[in-house]
Image 1: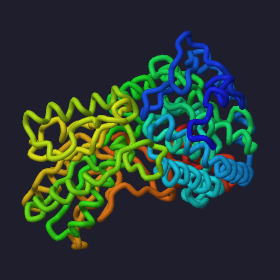
Image 2: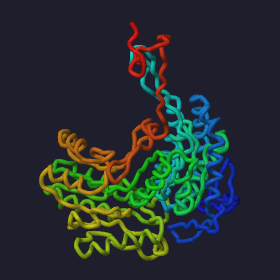
Image 3: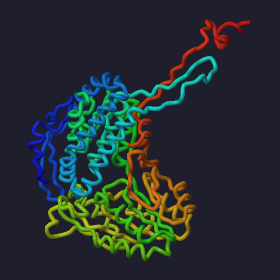
Image 4: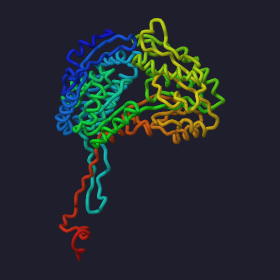
Amino acid sequence: MDQRFDVTERFADGAQYIAGRLGEGGSEGTHAVVDPATGEQVFSYRLAGTADVDAAVAAAEAAFPEWAGATPGERSDAMHRFAAALTERADDLAHAESLQCGKPIKLSTEFDVPGSIDNTAFFAGAARHLEGKAAGEYSGDHTSYIRREPIGVIGSIAPWNYPLQMAAWKVLPAIAAGNTIVLKPAELTPLTSLMFAQAATEAGLPDGVVNVVSGTGREAGERLVSHPGVAMTSFTGSTAVGKRVAELATATVKRIHLELGGKAPFVVFDDADLAAAAHGAVAGALINTGQDCTAATRAYVQRPLYDAFVGAVADLMATVRMGDPFDPHTDLGPLISHAQRDRVAGFVERARGYATVVTGGEAPGGDLAKGAYYRPTLITGAPQDSEVVQSEIFGPVLVVLPFDSDDEGIALANDTPYGLAASAWSRDVYRTGRASREIRAGCVWINDHIPIISEMPHGGVRASGFGKDMSAYSFEEYTQVKHVMFDNTAVVRKDWHRTVFGDRQT
């Protein structure tokens, strides 16, 4: 298909997906989807208003009894069909993702889309395995067992950096567990979330099980989080906005799941494979143009390897090819917007006053000047308490700092408010074992950085939030546990009744 396929024609009916149908938003405002590689508008739509959120929640509430009452096998079958429908649309999904995000097509084709399809297939199987504690006579006179039940309507908010994958991470565990959902994607990138929801309907999931409202956080997002019909909120985004989500959810005593910012450390001990670490750092720092909450952002390198590591990373960054996202040879696409590029550039320009920009640190000229591009950037000499070390930049910027002892390296790794992901590089199993125990993060990679798999959980600690996406562990977020207890004695007057009235029976 044409890489610039006609989005306007595809979504001519609007960018809201409620009860199995596309429709226009009810807000007075409109929003433009812009190709960040060119700065050109590719689609404009009416934003969702509060009435659209109300309608989507009502649709999800209406669909809940049937979907929650389906057998695990029935939900599993529907989700297997869903995975097949996504597979048929893989090319469209990849091109839409690259168009709205500026992702290199090889990243969309080889990572975002197959990862989302695999996640769908995983949860199709996991839908049949909602486990609980074994039934038993824990009190002696009673049999207890556990029911794991869906919560109800889930209200989820997803970010713009991985629109398709974040839609999958939010929707799939929720519906596999028997919930229904209203998803609010980022208004910058609604296209693949809408296509994902359409594929669910086409696969036979009942209308209203998956709904999408495309609107702003202030209007649609806040209404969704505070809606009395929403039983749980899942949010992925910045820590600052996550705090606001928590405030709103608390007012109606909702369960919340927060996957927030990160500032992942990349700890290289002096016995590490230098070439492997340098390659891992460049890949881990530049994936999705650095717009990844688990991206390698702070490399701490033990002093014997420090100079060689800096040189190797600088050399590798010089080989990275920037260009048209739809060129299969492009390695690095633009940032999501010119505003985000300028934000990243601001961090780097301020850092020049206290650190050294070894390579990069500028937007390219020529044919790429009209897009939101920024060169891969390596910074050294920054103090540990500086903003480029402590704050989430969300761009293609890697800061490298030296350390001496293992104690110091681990302490520096833990010296930010965040705790989403980290990696440790060493040939010594005891060193890496210690790092995996002592680095405070929801995921610690050893001799690699970034890979994720559907079977394992993703989520952080501290200012990076709490709760898990992916894997069977995510069912802890999307189910409620009910204890059912049966009397086995058929005795009218139980011995414990004497503690309330009467005397012990003789």
